[in-house]
Length: 59
Image (cartoon, rainbow, N blue to C red; front, side):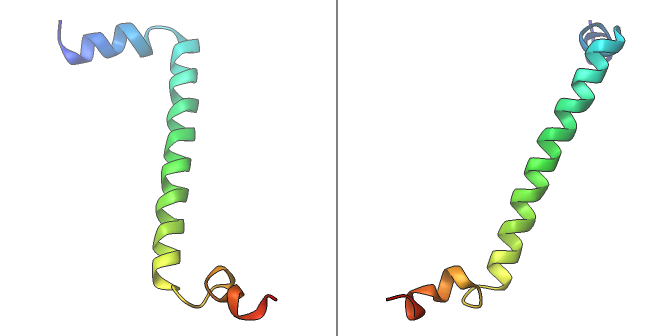
């Protein structure tokens, strides 16, 4: 049994399983993309954000 037949039997055989797989994949992709873009933004703007300079202004 190859990879494609295993994927067919586990995911694509029933519409409900396929729908759950698509929704789960979209959720995981969204979280990963959000975390990666946030990390890139924080790296580029290091020292310019409120979280980096708030200690100067708080009593």
